Image (tube, rainbow, N blue to C red; front, top):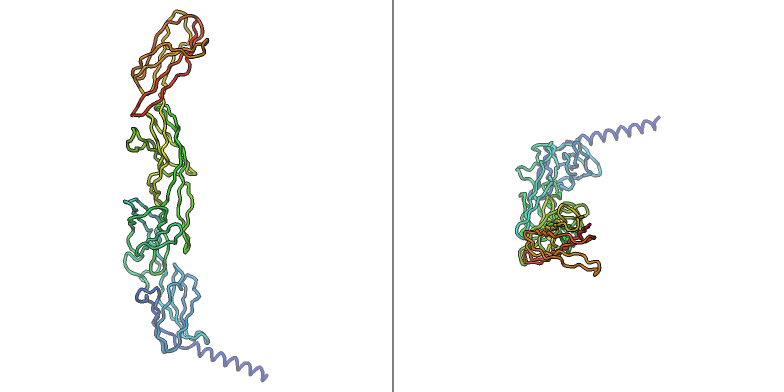
Length: 432
């Protein structure tokens, strides 16, 4: 009984001691403000009666971070908490109580007003345009999310509360700032060549985020043009475009990787006359895998080369590249050739009319030939004048038999370059 009574007294004494310690006066007037001289820290101040203090961060509908700081007796009632101690995009209070690391908290908590730790709003799109030897980059920023703690003591006033640091990354280097932080929504880079990656380090009082990326890509193009083309019949120019782009991981050297996207513009250029400037003959875009297949209208013999022009779209600009020129020799096109009315059978002694039309509408002399079965060779029948691309001949069918005729059209000069002639397929005629 005596032992039980002693234990009870000890428990009661300890309880009385704890109650006495936890009834210390609580601090008052807990306030928060930004540290001076632009230091990224929150200054906490309070009033008390010269007691040791315990400082923590409390989440308001947010998880509380594990931050505790004890201020000894005699130190100023002031402490700076680095912004890195606060989780981003949350709502918090600073709680101050009397207490030590050994004895724990010995008073009630007094809390600061609620404040948010909303970070910067990253740019969501960036456009780029070539300007001289450089580029002009513009970016847009979405509307900031709703502020659930308006006019809190750590709100930074003013319309432009965040800044943008322009950064460039090249193969084998890390992302580096190329200018001071700005509140502008555009950046002029006076001289730059791809490949590179442009990014914005967007910052405000609470942190930094990356966004507003623009890729400067190099391009290479391969392709071929047919060596021959019938006049006015389109040729097919085919090939592939390969792009090289830069990728940068944080704190690591940037590297390159190959890209073969669809939608890259391709232009086929030609020289109409020798020494003339290169002008567009046809346009197209790449399909999946970077391949292209473009129909090109043809005229006279001429060279062609395929190019990727400077091409910009949101978040990307492609440098120019060209294939080696390829020469396509034009061939006179036979538009029609045959016997009048499509007849291929005639009576001996009757008249036969044969005609030919070609493109271009040239004026020249064409030869009508007949196949000599005995000599096994083509024999000239008649040289015929061609005017405006047309020629015709009427002759009397001779002895009965089967005959094969053809027209031979000579070559010509067009736009200062040679154009190959043409020979029609055999035109069969039965004479009975």
